[in-house]
Image 1 (cartoon, one colour):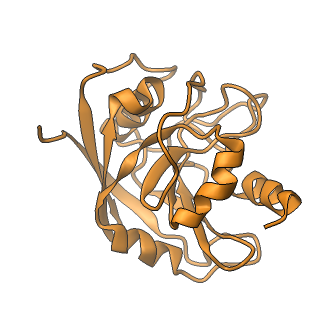
Image 2 (cartoon, one colour):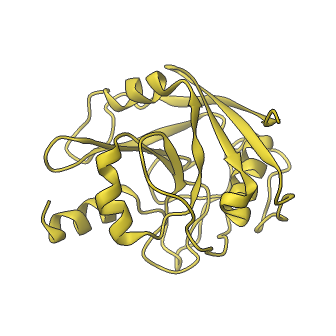
Length: 208
């Protein structure tokens, strides 16, 4: 894939709200964070079950992967920020290889967030199929609530060129649900014609 095409793909697929914009708040969460939440125990790990209109998938998030970002996503899931939020983007690479599904924007536009941003951290780990990572704009400290799930190992090539998207963890169950979301019909802007929705999230400590 040409470098220019890669840059365009990343800009249109993984961007969250601009760091200079005013991010939106939660439409349904009660008691959600209003600023970057406290960092969880570095030795802990959490499983988050995303119940969607197409089924449930579960991600495992070791806090040590990205302490600020994992603590943030976990706090938002615990307060049900993501309830009734859609997956607003399904992106494929130029050659037709599945790339990512993206969600977590309460406005459903790709420009919303939780009402605050979190600090950047060094990216730890490798981008591969099943990895969940934070979406962001090109500006520093622009992560909020949007996230994406990688659909194919080949996505590592453009993602590694940027290497700015915090890796949170990976799908441990229900990858077929992620694939079903990725297979939905889209319009010309990578938006699903009938966007699937997150119905609820359940957070539990990971089994030892």
